[in-house]
Length: 318
Image (cartoon, rainbow, N blue to C red; front, top):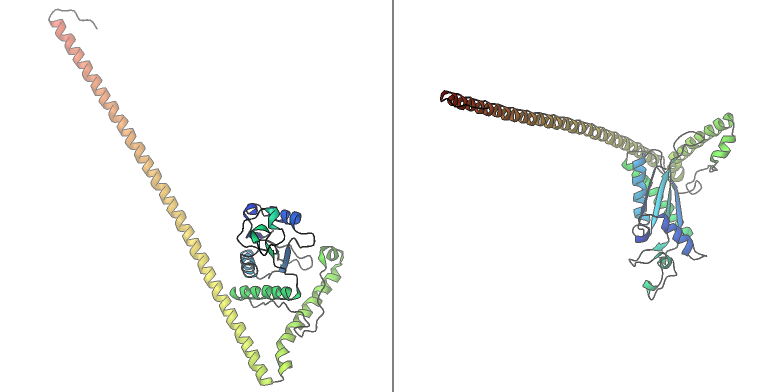
């Protein structure tokens, strides 16, 4: 798992979202869906943090604060070409939050339109062709916004090849088991065919405007604009790379500066500690000196008393 997140969970499931899905399985109506799932392939061009930001953006636009949800991004290696295969699973409840606190059993009850507090949360079914199409378009739009933001020329189109006027047969998902059974020659042929199909698709897209309009001058203007757009995107990408590099350099400099400051502070503390130890050593030495002087003085006074006693003819005992 590359990253994960969750949101809009009721109080009783915020610490452990699994409790929400378990309650949905237990209390949701037998003929109702316990959850909806959106599975979306993510661009290889984006890094893990950028992909997580993309999903958070998509969830905010698709679900907002209306539905409890949980998502996870996985990124296994593709069995065929060995590249990244990032994709996201977004699970959400069709139950619409309305601010009323409900326990698990009531949360999934039938909605009571007259007295909402006595029923469960209202359901907003997304299982229609229109809603599915809208979701697919939103997924493509959000991905394209993030690809453009990070300076990538690649784009996502949710429409079928037929809808886009592309003469190409969609690939079937092979899966790791089928790929494992394929010979090296079969895999090489499949990859070669895939690359050829991609080049053909790109060529069809580039001439599609010419085919549809029949206006050569307009087609040239369109192609020039595409070229300029690509150049601007490339310049923007390079600019962002420079900014990112500069930001990384500044981050490293700040890191080195903080480290140096920490080392200086450590030296200051050591010097301070050494000075305190030296002051303590001198204080003890001074106390010992004073103590010795006092002992000498007491010894001298005792000797003087002894001498005076003898001179008077009195005995003196130590």
